[in-house]
Image (tube, rainbow, N blue to C red; front, side, top):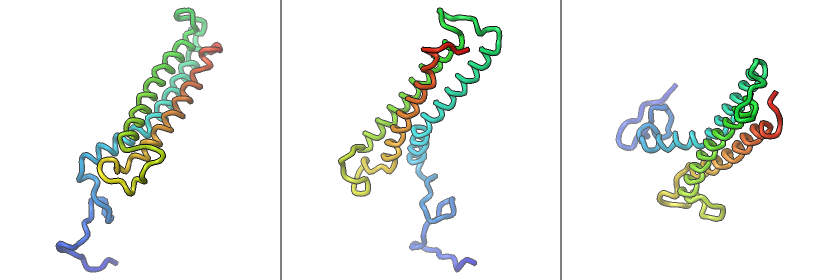
Length: 158
């Protein structure tokens, strides 16, 4: 059961979420920052998983078809597609990693600085630690993309 409703100037404000937290939908700028951070955090894993599935499925399809012996510029078709897909995925992943790096540095990112709770001004943005996590994820998944495509350079696909 709920108690009597409190109204008036001193009453707590409740957002659309129904809790006591402020309504994040009221500030479009914070929504945009949240979406940008979500993209920067998830870009590496999404690009890697997409790259992995594309490389795996195309190698399976090419090796099971009659095109297994076809070549493009002296390289087997499956290997050529894997190399191109790896380069495209690496460029995309590194671009998002660079974006996370820039956001981290713009947010006052550093190892030996004043803790975020004591900062004031634009450097006190709460997503600065998330940007660092985005950088780390970007580096790890860029390496994963490179290691996924590396066998196409040294081995035959089929």
